Image (cartoon, rainbow over all chains, first blue to last red):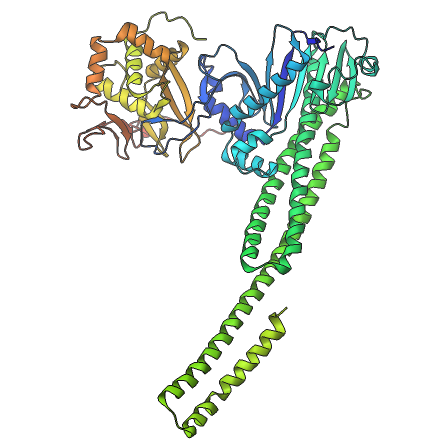
Length: 421
Length: 185
């Protein structure tokens, strides 16, 4: 079984980025998609032109090269992607306003199933490395806070993607997907690529196996309907992985808030200051996550409309293809509520934090007052001793100090009552 | 990639020479398109090109949109050089804006120059015009009033590129002489 191969496969990696019509328009405009250039444009070079006055300038690293094939300004971009200007091999890139970002390659040779896994991994890594520099700072900041990472390098490693392998055959005759997946000999054959297969179906002589990490479609001459169906599933599975990560990140933050809540009563001033900064950062990130969630929800709603039409018009509701995007919309609503709740928790924590900080500041102030009063008394008596006051003068000075003494004692009692543990 | 080079006209060859002085694929150096327009405007005035000096374009000049010189023939020539892979178009980030349009002479472009243009009268003439007496190629700076060619060795040696920037197009049409009526769509 180890020698099984995908025959003439194509591999598509799917990612989702917060795109929208404006970002896509800007990308198309800067790429000159409407100008039908025959030569690619370099994008995403590392570095920046520091002073616009400099006519000639130097960049730190090369970017990637994009050559548009088809586009609508605010809707989509289909382009060839190359690592270098003269590279013969190009990858196919499809971007749309709803954030669906696909990169694909196809082979005219057979590809062992085990090898396919590493090809997918390399393609994912390369795509994120090339594609992230094309995004604006706003898009990147949304992604970073959603994935809970601090820089672009960490982001490259954190992005969730989903893969689709389309192959003419795997060298085993397949009647239908159910029979294949239930056959003990074949059950785990695709697992190196797909991970656990959770859904499968056969349609138009194509056998589709939908796993947690990738799906495999075995069949040839795919109809436009079949391709649309695969695209729809690809989007769903990509979103599924992303929302899983989003929720996981929210959970980590909830956990952190609980820890902060427990530590506030016993924390010193410096630690409280750090908590305060951390809460402000979490608050800002939540605001970004709300925006990310909104953009994602709108994209899901748009794709869901297309999906519902596709399924309804083709009577495909019977297919075993998972929950669909309606579930994702419900999950998005839940996330929104959770984020709102956490916003309230943060506000409450900030109040607690402020009270505790005020208390410590007052305590410190009282400590200082007390120390100053005691020092004053000692100084006055010391001066009296040095000057050599007579007994009468000393009594007069002492009497004059009585109000100070009373105030010191009162301050001490107040301090003990309010601040000592 | 890249079409077979079927013969470049003199303007196209000269463009390549200029880009080879200011950019390099291997060194990742680029020339801003606005700066390039200024250079070609200057060289057209020096009669290295036959471009029409009266054509204008609204384009980015640092952070502002201004009327600058750009001949359509020049724009077409750039694209022809790109079609032959002699020139690379790039969009770079700057500190203050997302995209700056720029180009660079490709490795193939340098090879073409070495084979066909090196030591020609045009090559040496352009290089001499864009160089300081000390031998260095002059930097092109997009100063507020106008672009300036300046030597990095001796900053007092400046050549202003006058007439490149326009605050606006002077409309010499006499509206009163035109006969028009109200129009409602």
